[in-house]
Length: 110
Length: 116
Image (cartoon, rainbow over all chains, first blue to last red; front, side, top):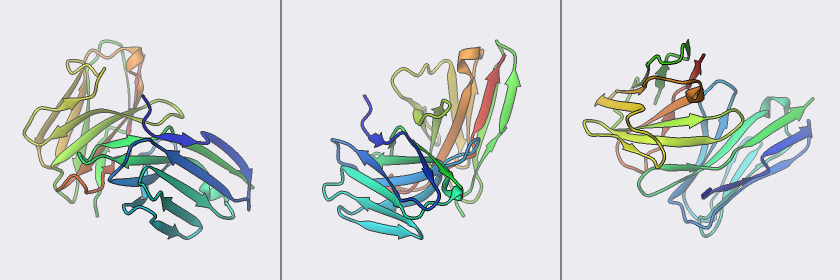
C-alpha cells in the first residue's frame, strides 16, 4: 500500500513555466522532506517542513506543509533546465522511517 | 558536514556471486542506517533498518538471508547480497542518521549492481 501519493509522476515543460508537485496522504507525518535526485546519485535533501501550515522558500522553490500535516506541495517558479531531475517527497514517521512518494520526473526544455 | 560515502559506486558480476556494499558516515556517528532499493525511474523502497550493535529490522517481503546487513560500528554498515541473481540487479542506496529519530537522514550516492 502506497501511503504517500505523489503527482504528477512525469512532467515536461518549457523553460520559464511554473509547476506544482503534490504529495498527499491519509496519514499524519511528524515531518515531511523534499529531495532531488540526479541519475546515478543519491537523493539530496532540499527542505524539511515540520509545522502544519509551514511555508519555506528556497530561491525559486516554495514548499508548503498542509495544516493537518498530511500533505505537501512543491512549487517551482520560472523553471530552468537545471531544475531537471527526479523530485521525491518523503514523510517521516515518529520512528524516523521515511515513507517515499512515487517521485516526479521533471524535464525542463530550453 | 553530514557526508555519507557508499562504495562501490558500480559493480558488475556473474550470477551466484556475493556482493558487499559499504556505507560509511564520514563526519558524524550514525546510530541508525537505512538500506533502500530503487528501480529505474521509480522511488526508493526501504529494505531494512540497522542500529549499531543490534540485528537489522527488515521490511516485509525482504529476505534477511539474501540481504545480510551488518552495522558493527557507529560509522559503518554493510549490505551483502548473497548468491546474487539477475533479478537482484538494481540501484542500492544507504542513508545514515545520528542521534534521535527526528534527525534527518543523509544519503550516500548509491551502488549500481548489475548481475549478468
